[in-house]
Image (cartoon, rainbow, N blue to C red; front, side):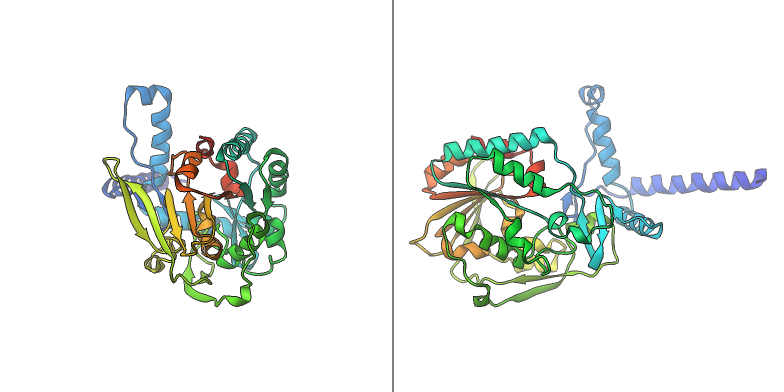
Length: 377
């Protein structure tokens, strides 16, 4: 390689870096990624404490990872490059059979898992009402045969076994309820949630523990509300070559009200009307938020069935599509998400006349949740 060519390549590389730096400087920071459906890291404050503790550098690394020009395009390009060289994974997502994207499930951190089981036990002891604990296996368990050969995948059944041994409340492993239907579209191919059909089979699996007779699927009429759903796994994977999912609903919403309880900037309680199905989300990227209007710290679903019990459901977002199936069996369903809610559930039970409680999470969410300490208050 002669000197002139070396100078040319160096200048070209420096020019490229200059363009990237300039583009990043001119591109305004974004608060939220619609494509990935998550908040983006913001520029950390530079303080002596943050600098000496290493917090600033850690925060700045997250900031520059999230805030750079053309980020979505670069993520997609990386996924295409991985595929071209024969790799079957990108950003912790496996490229699987049948145009399915499945998030890798890694071995849980045992201390956190043990703590979370203990928090459930603490809640069950303080609740003063019957408490049921349930875990939902995900695609990585039920659709393991779709994974690339030899793909690392910790067995979620081991978590179920630990739950059975560690939790004193009645435990429901929903693997059996879903296993017999794994050939059906019980999960989305591009999202981590179960579909409404999967939620129905979960509802059947919970029926004995919660004391109701499930409504036969044949009594429902399926309505397809979207054929263009791309979920969170699609977004994080960078994959752009798979077909979208369909979204279906089964349960009519007549006679059902949903209220989200929040607080304003002064700490005053605010009631926000929601819907069982908020169809305004069907025109957005985050279509799964159609169920109950998406994330909420505390929600109350009233069904009009005055002779039925009241249920407290401590949950993650899998319950958003499960709740419609529960509405025939309860007068009220109170939903607590401890990512956002810091109320004492035992006190809430006493204040609201709750008759029974269900703690229900997907396995990946339960093993990684750092907020479950609040349920034992």
